[in-house]
Length: 147
Image 1: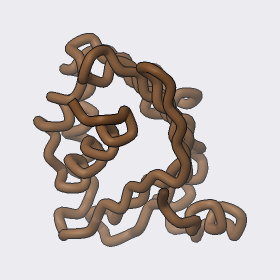
Image 2: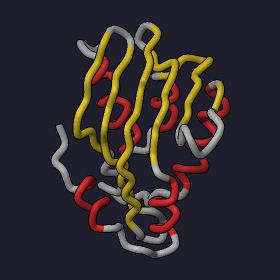
Image 3: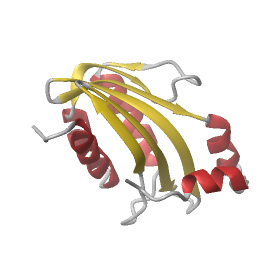
Image 4: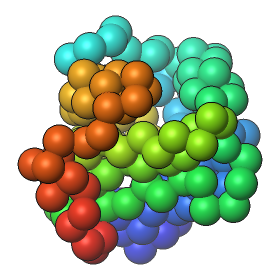
């Protein structure tokens, strides 16, 4: 087991940066409840649902090295819960960069993630997908250095 929940989660980020979906799934409990956009979409429940999401989401991410630049800016943890503020940034298959500042709560059971709630503005993501640039205030949030 990693020495902190933050280190465990950073390992998952590293796995996803390499688009290693099987290893990401191995870091989750079988009954994971994942709110990948907590206020915009219903949660994914179970590894099969998480696997399907990763497959669809991953298919839209460029396969070029460095295409995923997911980073944590601030974090705090207590017992089996990690709170993070970060930026999920990636290049899609068309070459467009999608930048999404977010906050998340990750719950652990043993060495695995059992609950995951990301709070993200889907409007910001959709506007970028349609070709709009980030608003200056969102760019300022996204440009802060990682922890």
